[in-house]
Amino acid sequence: MNAKRWRERGMGFVSSMLFWGIAAAAFGQQVPDSTYDTRVAEPAFKETHPRVAIDEAHFNVHTAEGGYKAFADLIANDGCEVTSNTAKFSAESLKANDILVIANARGAAMRNDPNVDKPAFTDAECDAVRDWVQAGGALLFIADHYPIGSASECLAKRFGVDMSKGHTSDPEHVEPSRPSLSCLAFTRENGLLGDHPITRGRNEKERIQHFATFTGQSLKGPEGSVALLKLADTAYDEVPPNNERVSAAGRAQGVAFTFGKGRVVVMGEAACLTAQTTGGARMGGGAAGPRAGMNRPATGGAASQPAAQPAGGRPMAMGAASQPASQPGGANRMPMRGRAKAGGGMRMPMGPASQPMGGASRPMGATRRMGKAPASQPAVSQPSGSNPATTGANALGAMGANAGAAMGMNAPGLDNRQMALNIIHWLARLLN
Image (cartoon, rainbow, N blue to C red; front, top):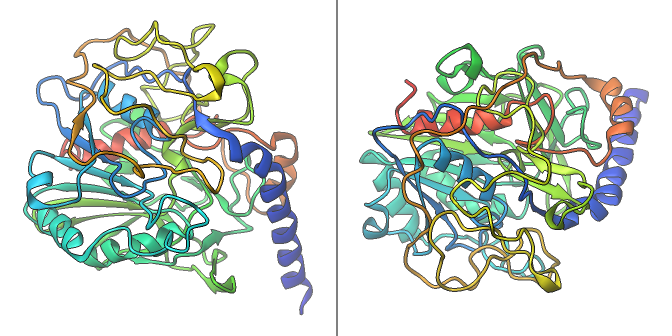
């Protein structure tokens, strides 16, 4: 084995040990950040309100009241009408929606269930989603590393998307704030941000400068698709069951394309659109733990990101300001957006192996969570300037002091929050 290869393997081993050691304690306790400010200074949808359904009928790791609560609140405050989909996909269940969001669907509720990597969708469901998009629907399809990719590829194939189903790493383009070779930086500076209306936004304030992912898989889009998040020649996948290393050169972690009359965005990593805390006390008050997602303030491109949050936590976006952030006994329940939801509370998105997650016990049939977001909201200020990404071995050194920092829409110096809004803007045809 040559010296360079050995160094890469050594870096990968150290990074993996950091990720699975440090992160085992931190990431294993990921909970939605109830203090994250999801207000939008200038909502995009003031007259028309796209109907967005977030899926929770397929053992989803992330749901509108779990890991994707901040995402759901954010796009609602941008003017979308947000609901949860608790029904199997069919022409009937899809027809009322403009945009469908599927985040980390699985074949079973338990992480240690042998069916967890089996198809999350039936053939009939895959056909229904394909036909709905082809007729003009819009799909945001998010599928993370193994076992999610394996469970999701049946639907991806309907759109000509290839999923690696492994874990993607790149020692030369590491996100400086995270201690892992699988946490990747996509910046204007390193040339890995694709040119697309989603990355350009409607104006300079919405232009994406620095986006990060936090351990996902690689994708290959169909002919004519645009790679939003391009993987460099140094990227590789480690694919189960033997973690065989395969080059990911020419692939991506985010792609966008039209499909018939509809539009599709596929992301190979899910935490990038969350706002979570990991290992701290933020849910119940006190000192904040490391954050995971949108809830670290962006410093470039995201015009709608507040510069600071009020002491003691943010006012709730949709009138739930008086609801406590946590419940007795450690059973966290997130404040509801709009009227109360029947059928019980949320399940935490990243619980232990024996804990049901996502839509494991949800009743079938759509349950509305929120009506239209308010057309006017308090203005919030936005700092300017963007932090360039560190690359290669220097990034690993820089991460030492930042182990356990945020990942996703809450990460400092990142435009993940604005990217989430831009994706919805493009799917809703606000961007062309």
